[in-house]
Figure 1 (tube, helix red, strand yellow):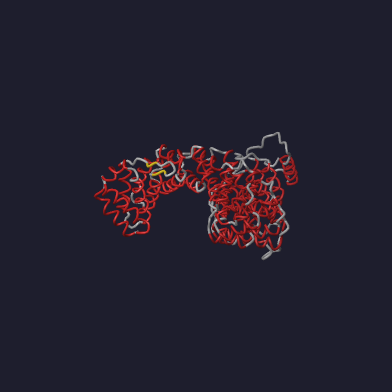
Figure 2: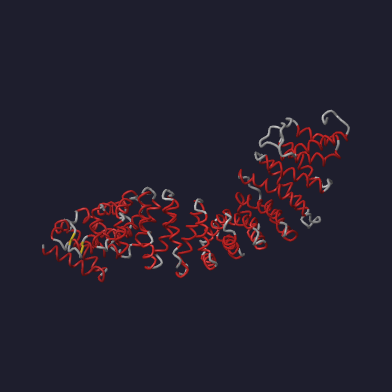
Length: 590
């Protein structure tokens, strides 16, 4: 009927019938391939039926199949944006055109960049026109147009389409005007926040530059009890804070952003999206000391732990929470850490996800931060099962350098206590230390942590033998060869050798290999001005010479040693003089 040039009244009825049929929830007939073009062509013959045409298009689009071949996207976009851009059209018709774009972009995601830019510009221009400055503010138009805009920006975010600064600034200005005129219309605010969120994924710098942080937080403050608003606000703040920009963090901190994030965690514990986004945002913000103070003072620590317990299957969130806890624990008052559920939760999750290497590394970092607070926390961690958890992670993920380095640093801290020294050895922790040294030989940082760990463990007499039997001396020699140009590594290795050389409790002196003596002499020669290198090398030599069996190996380096020992005694008399003279006297006497 429509194509056969029927009278206007009949075409009008046909359009109404198509609209009704298309709006049925259970459509059982296929759409004609050219239906959209036929409907749009009605406007050419009967311009006054444009509103009917718009309603039919909207209903057809709502029921259309995604990626439908019946649609000519460019033709439809041009048709609809022409309606929106023409100020001669009634407000009702232009609002209906916005509804068409809303339906169109909601069902048809495969849009060209050009079409997206045209739709964005058209929608934003009309919304700006009726924001209360040029024309009377129109709430219903803003609500429908913002719905379409949220869909358009969603696709833009998915394909990574960036807008220019001016376009983003216009959106931010519009948002301020909506706050002035329509602060209580939630669906409108939700749509606009969705648009900001989508643009934040590709244009975060522009959002930040144009005041997006402040206006988003203002909306969150106005609707603190609205779950939908808080969810969107938390997601936006999580994206923007991920830039790790100091100015961004300061802006969020100084404009009630942390208050809103913590409040959302507390008020909407059942909303996983809020919990994840708020925790990620707090994790990003925790790099700033002022932010850490605010988070902990408002109970953020326990809220993060609660979020972890409620979202155990969200690994991204768990990692973000661990990072936040690591930073927060580092400078929080010890009284605020009295609740054992913090580290107990971390250890429980470590046991639950043994194969998640990135999470394990971040979880160990939290344990390390606890351990470094004081001896009481070292004891608590040891009694809570922290040592087996760390050792197990190191055994399971031997090839991961970051985890091994973190694990070694944690064991070093825990090994300050004698009870923990025993525990580390009893759960097989010495072997993984030596294995990490051998596998990651070229990592100076890891080698220093490993040496420190072995040094602390060797304070227990039973561990000295276990350390040597695990091949630690061979590892130390390789370490000193590989890091000959690292003063700190040489010093730490010399210190370990000095500890292992003698076992006073067992009245034993270890047999020294020629390689061990050579490495000690080389360290003294390479770093004559390093007090630590000289002190521990001289101490190791003196300890070895407590046994006559070691004299011959030491004497093989006598030509170099005499001058090196005299130099050490002269340069560092308090640390080296007595032991250096003991070595010299022993060599001369034999």
